[in-house]
Amino acid sequence: MHRREVLLGLAAAALPLRARAQTGPVFAAATIEGERHGIALLSRDGEILHHLLLPGRGHDVTASPDGRWIVAFARRPGTFALATSPAGDAPHVFTAPEGRHFYGHGVFSPDGRLLIATENDYENARGVLGLYDATDGFARIGEWDTHGIGPHDLNLMPDGRTLVVANGGMDTHPDYGREILNLPTMEPSVVFLDAGDGHLIERHTLPAAWSQHSTRHMDLLPDGSVFVGCQWQGAMADCPPMLLRFRKGEGQAAIGLGAEAEAAFRGYVGSVATNPGAGTVAITSPHGDVAAIVDGVSGKLLSLRHQADVCGVAWDGADFITSDGAGHFGARAHPGLVFDNHIFRL
Image (cartoon, rainbow, N blue to C red; front, side):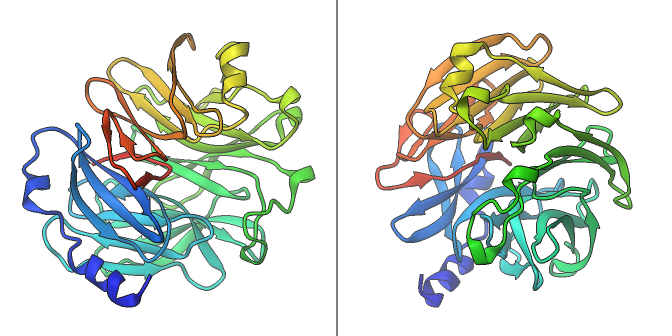
């Protein structure tokens, strides 16, 4: 992409009036259109309210609690993030420092002053959370250890004082693309950290037989249940359950979908979303062209939907909405547009 195109995209990045005037939820999703990468803001019915260019391929989006900032992150091993503002503040790109790259996910502190992003200290095979000051142009002011390798997704727990991070366990280095460098010694984990100073509260590793079950994406329910979708790196005949539930102080439990549904996921969960009111959880697999909804308490499989290249999923207030690589967002199609991995509800 030419630099001029990027700058034009940034210049138009403030959230337009028609998006701010929406009475229903607004969603954000990374897009691909030919060789152009961007972020789309969409209504519940799939109308594109705004579309802005990114310097490279995006992954996920987060937003500050007060709605001032929307931040899009590069896909691993990208190093850029783009911050834009519905208030019309000048949008800008900031980058991870030398020796670090983003994993595509981040979350704001409860007061909105700090952006916390999952990053790779790739020369030392160490996961970190990069800390960026949202009150000072997203200047990087420090980092916290994630006590694992390959931190991918993270979230702020309902108590507002605890962070939960999924360390996928996969050692990668930009010089080798997305190749896994430590397959025989992987150690995926889910950790709980103090959101005030980053100190470790709990660390949960998976059983030894599941060491190649990379813990990746997550969502929460109000009772503190953390649902983590995994990506299996071993032989499919040995694939563990695709969805795990964690609770601080209690450890982990596998959510079994049943043999047929588990096989349909082909060892890969692309996104996880929860319905806080109903206590249900949705997971998707673009590898298996399938999405499942389960009861978060009982673990019962409620429905299985087939959709080609489905990955993005979010709760829209009435149902789970999905997106795919053929340009479908909910029931609306956008020919020529690819919706990338995730949907974020603003």
